Length: 197
Image (cartoon, rainbow, N blue to C red; front, side):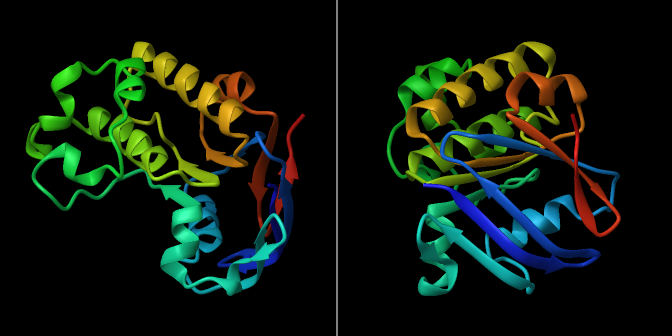
């Protein structure tokens, strides 16, 4: 199902229209403070805004906010962890995902307190997919990763997006990464999105 954004306004952004097709990764960049994260939060119905968002033919307004966020899931740059063990945050075990991301068999039993920022980022993405979302919003998912882990993450998430045909908006700063993973790239310019070719 496509993710359709119509006349969305939040902060400086005004009347944004965007359609993300099934299995498509749309990359979004912009200066610090330009509104990238707020744009994702508006799509996930986490901040007051104007405009409409549809997933397929379903209007976001047809769902309670918590149900919408299960379907259109935001993975923030700084993930939140509320229980002691990693496994308590997953909807189902994800052994193949964790292996693809470089984690050993015992990672689900780890304490959250022992996780580095990079481990939290990778596990937060796997945690999101464990809940079976239908669209994904990624806010700088590799910001805390070294080159090797970034490569692992890009390979894994690209395969998952192709397999599930989820529409994805991926906020990033790295031009090379956006060329590797993105089907299209937009830059926030003032109050609008500008296509980058």
